[in-house]
Length: 430
Image (cartoon, rainbow, N blue to C red; front, side, top):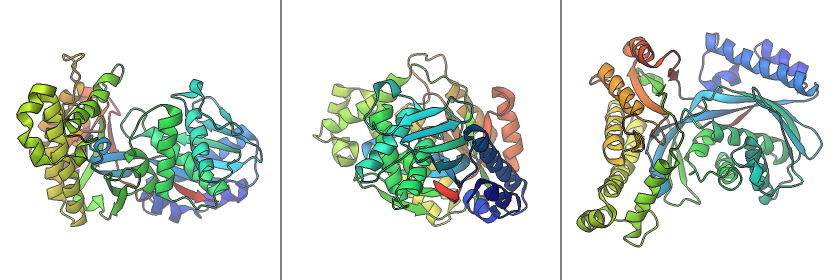
């Protein structure tokens, strides 16, 4: 659709049904007006930056939240994740060249020449690496990827554990799939392509959970027993019926110098699995592990053993959480979330770092949230841990008090009230 036609279509409500389907909002709601305004802003900015008014397409790719399965994915375990209503929105069109030009709001323009799809060392940890990596992965599947112009804006909180990088990879994958792959790539294909770009080009050895949750959308249960072909199952549950709100709380902790802490978790779990001649803990029989605990403690230390114990229990919990939501039993799900939070803190031990043990921002915020909730709701570490965010399910009648109390301690806009979005990476309009 021509840009001016698309703008009129949006302003006259032509896109309202799609917006509500993607974000889960209602016709006539304030949030619907906000989504309309944001999309119009992206189109206006595209016109300003690239000076083009020809045919365009609109895209959206969400951030994600981890509902269950803390540090189970890298051991080929089970996770429960969901896309959220924070996303990247993009206006784009092919430019009939070999160069991709992407203007991300607030950042310098990226220009990537796709005649060279080899990894560039100077692009490690930069968005350029993700663009080139996604194009390379699609090319390996037999598609000819060409240039396009794109303007995008994101409200996926950077460093929040909502995985802004996975949302970006999903966005690039959805754009290329639509323009150059005849929309033949599945959501799972796009997730794998995103992981490939992040691992090989961006230089981060991440698992597949983040990309899968962003690309597939809604609540997804993922079994990574076969990592090359994970079993992905969408869970049909409307979180609104729980009368609880999902909150992500920024603890204000610094991620700097935590690489060693993050790396130690899969390394120590790997040491335990290696003692049984296995690569990951998913391949180890728990009963055999328990029998070997005395020797494992002597050889690898108590923390490694505790982290393995966390994996076995957390893997079962992720499955049980999925089953609880499938049955509409939020109370059981809530109990399991609380158990997960205790296990992460006590056994996985990823709520503070031994480098600076006097600084325990995550523990402070967990304690504060628990003191507000009492026996209600649930709270747990979110994502990798050590710094960043915690997750809380807060009864709606407590939500205002909870948010106000948290922000009185941490500062304004540190408690984010989110919703689970029904859709993953998607073409909004073409």
